[in-house]
Image (cartoon, rainbow over all chains, first blue to last red):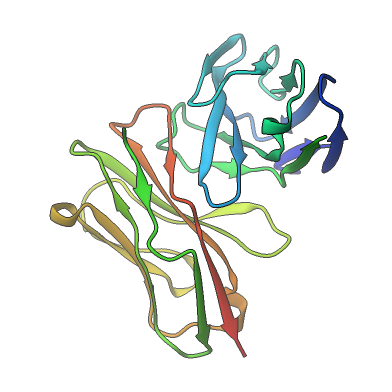
Length: 114
Length: 113
């Protein structure tokens, strides 16, 4: 199993550009989520999904969209990038629905918005 | 608002020293508790977790943590650290088994050989 994969590993955007961060898992996990990690802060939940076709907002959803058309994929879209979105983004998945189960993380995407 | 505090952002120890990393949370209800670790160049991975039962839980690589409900704490311990324990350690709390994990800011641990 590849586990949780994320692409790209690094990305630089200009303010106002849009892009999609890709996340995929091959473990047939129902629950997937996106976090951002900023210096001196813990991970903060952006959006999550409890199964294909179902998504919901986390703690910091503004400026981001998600969709879950398949169990495997959970892309994160930045609609109009802002410098405040400079961060490291992690995708995670778990077998059981909900954060109580062990989360499996991707390697992260380091995003810089100029 | 619910929060998780990790007392030390950076810890430097020599090999064979004992380790204790503090974690406190602010939530009065039922919680599930986790420690995750990120080794250099690797993904975040679960170190150990507490759901119920024995408040002393054991994880991988000789780590353990004790849940003290009265102190809202879940401190991570290891009696003798190794150079390979150099990593960043995160405490996380899941209140009431809902869909969100609340994370601490992390502690960067450096072990001097």
